Length: 185
Image: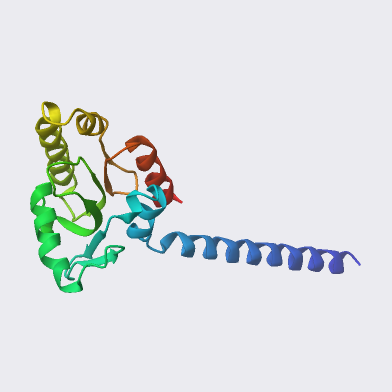
């Protein structure tokens, strides 16, 4: 009788450990899936800002419009991405992956992006984006007061997940927070 109880207890323990192991495996598998940077930006922005295109690329791949409400021709993505990165002070080799939406017109302070730096490039990427924000602030300081206020509220932050996030837009804190939550979750 005692032997049957011990066997039953061991079987129950083995079942519990097996189930716990399955739960842990599926949990870590879901965490290992990459986050869609474009979707994180779309989810963080207002409907009005989601009328803006998003360019994205991974290391070694050509840039593409991954959110394209303006129906920009696909062949314009690579030269546009090159111009955007140059404007931000970044080189493609500094990044493993990115998605961003940047106004290149000098009448609007707007840029939202998620940048995963290449190994050893995190500080340089952060510094480049901070320099970009500073230049936008200076350019609007005596030019367009409403855009200067937006630029003053800009956020550049390296997240615990490794990405550097740029939020130079209305409600920059809210956009940054939403992106951070999405990348952490």
